[in-house]
Image (cartoon, rainbow, N blue to C red; front, top):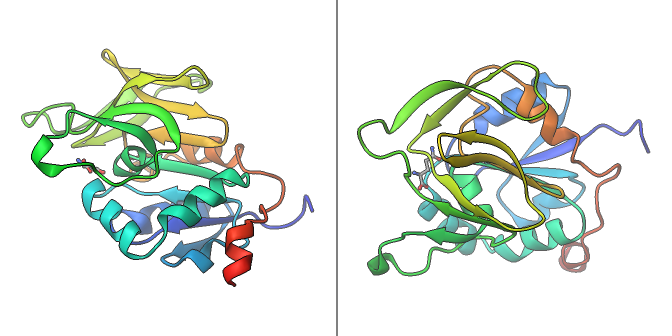
Length: 210
Ligand code: GLN
């Protein structure tokens, strides 16, 4: 079992999925692009990339992926959400204008995120981020990034930018406000790989529908 290759999926509906794919392949991981529920079978982990969270959430509903991804997580699969992906992982999205209504998401991780939290004038920037467990700053790229405004009890905070939380972990769930796939430094992806289960989880809902 321990010698099985690691299989990680990258949700490939929209956004920066190719960059995650390249980063993970560089770490020797077998990567599959996920567009359909059946694509989750045999995976140990899933990356939800940055992009536009409202679009990705809507596509996730259109492709009937929301419940299968939730079942994958419940069965022990690890999930890493970056930027828009972190918004989709969160239980609560703060400050959404009411006219947009409820933003569809996975509601898996006990965090509340504020979208576009760094404002329009400095909407994209790179900074050396102190990350718990890393011996030197991580080159973190923020692009119209959300901030994690509140975390629940089981959530471990791994990095702050100013007042806000920008990297957090809960069990096998990892959420970053920034884009670790864009700066060539693999350390956050390596951290994610440590959260993967030893073997791909059996997801009953998926094997039942084939
Ligand atoms: N601002 C985007 C959103 O709210 C996220 C931006 C990103 O993923 N780089 O969905």
